[in-house]
Image (cartoon, rainbow, N blue to C red; front, top):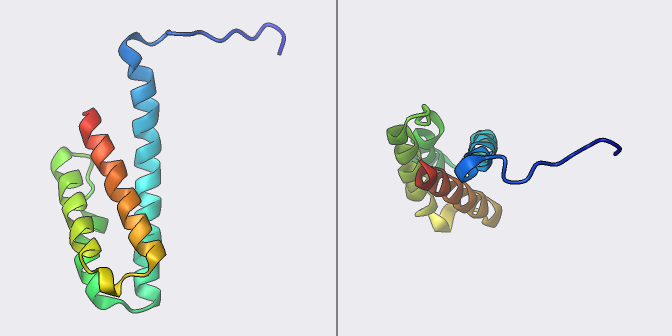
Length: 105
């Protein structure tokens, strides 16, 4: 594109990149949580849903809320014998996203 210039290193200490990455995580985590909630409800996996619901309702934007969400996801993942492989994978992905988000704070 004519006249289009890319600026390199325009962000001091890569804060812009951290903000974009955190925004992406804030958008991706709720989608994963909604998908998991839907799948647990569809197949009536009540014990998984019981362990999972605190994760669904705890993210409030504060560190404590994300830590509570992470703990509830770990509790749900502990029910491995009742999880489908794609559910276990999504739980793992959500936990990793939360870990990275909390590490960046």
